[in-house]
Amino acid sequence: MFPFLRNLIIFKIFQPFFQTVRDSIIPSDYFSWKTMVYLSLFSWLMSWVAYGFEATRFTIMLLTSFSWLFLAFGVGWGLQANHVKLFGIPLAPWVAGAILCGFIFGLIPGNQIELSIVTWPLISALIIIVPQFLTWDGKVKVPPPITRQQVILVFLISLLLSSWLQFYFRIQNWFDDYPSLMAEDFGTSGFVYRVPGRAAPLSDGVALLTLTETTLQQELHNRPWSGVERWLLNINDQLVNLRREIRDRLVSPSREQRFWRIDVRPVTASNGYDLKLQAIWQGPTAEPNGYYLEKSCQLTRVERPTPSPTTGLTPGAPANPTPAVGVAPAAGASTTPWSNLTCDLQTERKSGQPA
Image (tube, rainbow, N blue to C red; front, side):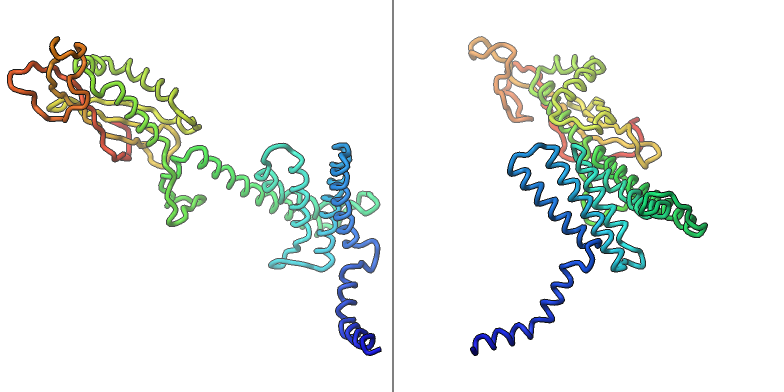
């Protein structure tokens, strides 16, 4: 008897809470937004059941489509019925439009996130506009002039918002495809803002100069000096082959690399040549005269002992494959000039075009 009374008292205490939960879950009218949400959940569960029983793709897609449509309609209806607003703006059409965009562009293969975000304001505007011209019976109606003005204003605002979103994605795609643009000065830009503390990505020009240095090391380092000078005398033709070889050795070519032109400029020095490796940017830039990246290399002449038949070395091969630079051969020994190529680690950015 006493346990029964105790349970009855507890039930009486929590009865208002249970009643509130019941009223919030069970719709007061069958034709309500809660019914739409429950139909969405039911369709979603049935689609999983159909998938588990290996139903046809058409059946699964049909149930999934109903789930998305019921969800968009129910959530939009519920937000509108409860007058949910953000800064005085009703959220119902915008949330329903976002759900519809996720459903529509989720059916298209590939990553369509950008397209769904760009079209989201337009679809949300259609959700606002269509009920102003159609009744629930599907008949066309003419709204009053004040409503027509509001409809036009909503459409123009959504079109402007969609254009700004498209502009953002276009700029971001440019930066992804052409990382050298991130090195520009955006201090006077009205659209691009550089986040403080975020380093600009490495330009493809630096990678091309590094690859050029590696290729020249194979072509000019530790070679007979006579062959090196012939290479420099025929530098125009050698540059054509060099650029082709660099393109072939690129691991992951990008769209930006076609705007870079590689050039090598030899300057006579006291003991050889100073080579200026240049990557000239021919794409869009904020600088009026453009810019280029430059890396300095030193091609020096090194005297090495000439191998004799008694040394057992192949004629024309260096006596010491890796001799110390600047070490003089023994007095009276015959020497042969060889090349030694060293490059600076620093890559400089210079305004204008190479002289």
